Image (cartoon, rainbow, N blue to C red; front, side):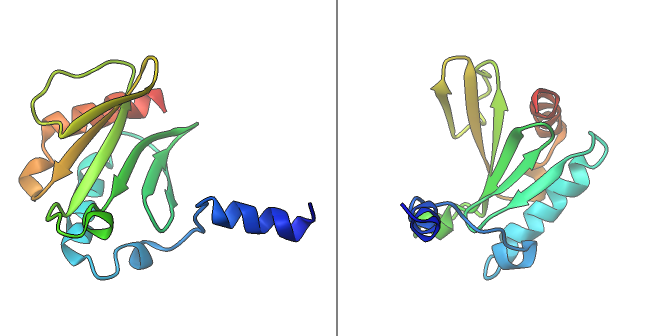
Length: 135
């Protein structure tokens, strides 16, 4: 396999190239508004890095601990403007979660739909902090 073949395979397997925040949210102004509100809400939790690709925004410290994505980009008729996915070592019992998955034993990914600023509340900030500590 040549180096060119290797690069082609990486692109074909869905590895996304980095994009800017403006590119990520292009055409999804409501989603950007909610993202900006979320960032204002979590700014005091601690330092993080953003990794932005075409499909998602990952929040990370030593490793990824939270992800943002726009369901309408992939699910067509979905009217949810933004989803935050948080990684925990436990299954949280709140009824607010849209879905909880356990991709590997002991790692639980919790998906929360965000529709308005009211969804970015103290409970979400606490969940974010818990996930941040694991990152």
